[in-house]
Image 1 (cartoon, rainbow, N blue to C red):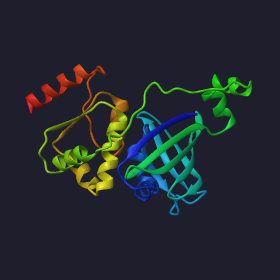
Image 2 (cartoon, rainbow, N blue to C red):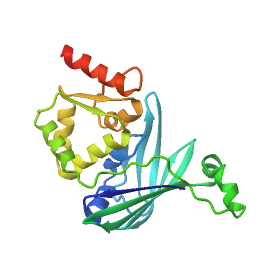
Image 3 (spheres, one colour):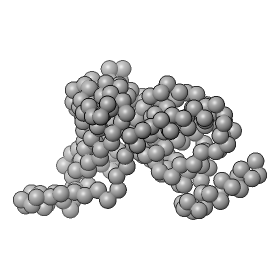
Image 4 (cartoon, one colour):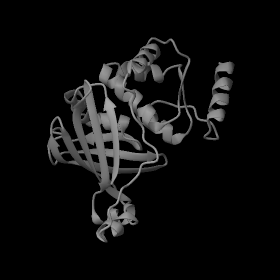
Length: 237
């Protein structure tokens, strides 16, 4: 089972409110392209939202269902991307340092998915081994998000010529913080305007393009190539 943890500078009630908005999942879930529709009673147990994942032309339509809702501390979802896999996603919210610690636990949601996703670890666990899964890469939101809000304000005010993103979590969190601050629509309008929104590659660009934002990407997914592309684009502008 994969485990990720992040600290968000907002109370659990505010974070859970965001999790209760199905449209927001298209912003912060990496790989999600857009939310196609949602049941009006989401996130009630049994309610669903219907998502699209992937990068065109390779996209899949499926749904995510609520398995448990203990607002504002716990939400359990079953996310399907058939025919590939079904995941069980549990979000645990705990008050911490004037904000919220969010722990995300993700594992296989059914037997076929366990055979695909956990084919190396499950046999060890069933044989009685004590297994510790290690994450070589973990992304955390900074404890002070004031600079991000300042950046959002600068974009909305038209003070910037370009923005560059080098990771999908950063792009998704940028949109999430804009939504939490009440400037989401203004930010989208600005990012769809003359401002150049550059990404190091299609994975990084996915959360932005799912929100209808056109991105500029280098042929080679390298930071140097991204910088050269921006210099060329802005120099010719």
